[in-house]
Length: 152
Image 1 (cartoon, rainbow, N blue to C red):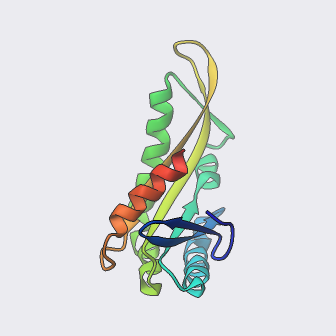
Image 2: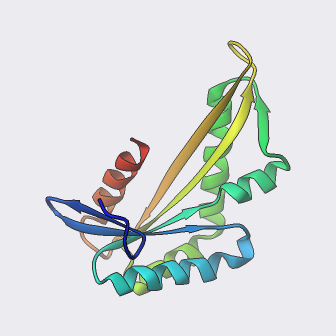
């Protein structure tokens, strides 16, 4: 793995994959950030993935830095639902990355919650959802592989 353009390059026996990473602070800037990441990935001249972090949007949505929930599973469910809804509501914008030959898009969000059970504690949770470009062979596999690598 190397930190170089587009942002990260991962070397594997199957080849190199570039990851163009962007933070989204406003839904209004989604198309611009997708385009910016796609241009960055395309310039690297290899298979690339756009990774978009929407954690700031999640925090704005809940109106706080943290959410109070009963269980860690409830925290996970809240963040997973937010990311799924975001992807559903912005499918066309997300797929614009495919017009510039992105292998796919990974949307991530992380949040912190005050979990009440079994004991009161602060917990972090991060989720990753993939949207593969099915026009490029094996991108679904590559996205799953990258997501698992990122989780480690």
